Amino acid sequence: MAAPSKKLQDALNAQIVAEFHSAYVYLSMAAYFEAENWPGFAKWMRVQSREEVEHAMKIFDFVNDRGGRVQLGAIEKPPVRFASPLDAFRKAYEHERKITQKIHKLYDLAVQEGDYPTQVMLQWFIDEQVEEEKITSEAVARLERAGDHPHALLMLDRRFGKREE
Image (tube, rainbow, N blue to C red; front, side, top):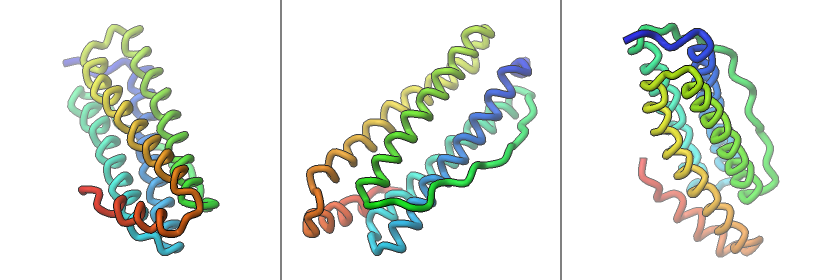
């Protein structure tokens, strides 16, 4: 099977970096939650970070399997300060929406290039992003309902800590 075109390969490499950046974003959020003594939210973010590394590696392996060349770029520093659990999860939701747009643009490029294997691989990411946006928007909604009520926040922290790895 032929490698993706240079233009598409460059875009896939950029997406690998974006996925690793996502892992950094979630790991930074985990660090915030750990510092603020929210172990459940921290665990949720750690699991999310590991999932983002898996996404990066999925594209990494795809490029290699097609005979392309992975070229890793610099990873942007993630945000490190958050006003509250709600603020962190709102930023996570916004981040997922940006990643969705990147995946859609990448898919559009694969269509323009007539690269069917890349389109098929990216369909998995399109489906995954529907799930990612759903779970982060649901987290935001729960935290909005909880407001500043300590008992509600403690219950949510415990619930989020039960996320499967």
